[in-house]
Length: 160
Image (cartoon, rainbow, N blue to C red; front, side, top):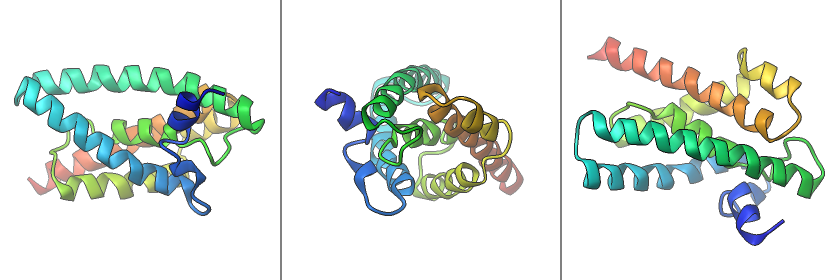
């Protein structure tokens, strides 16, 4: 496994944290999310354009994560090994779609995503059990992220 793939699979070595590597991987996704948001706002301003670019970027990132997670599984010779946390990054990016870029929402997204990633409601549980490859590793987190995103948007609408 190349240095770059290993670095990305472990999300800059967050996956090597000895306990709760998935939680550490999600926390390590926050600076990346912040960088993406700052760059999108600087380049595209406010409105729909940044969210279209965000969605396209998240889809591209997730597609790359399928391959990188698959490489990681083959390298560590273990299905969904704890070292692979790029799936948490993809799930967190899905969680944050369309939400305000404030610390309140960033932290709410972190906690909501972690809960849904741990609980794994269907179809996340289906992907986790059925697909023992990079696709399954990432898709269960994408599903958890979608649930977290829906919950946070419902909270946002309810509190508005």
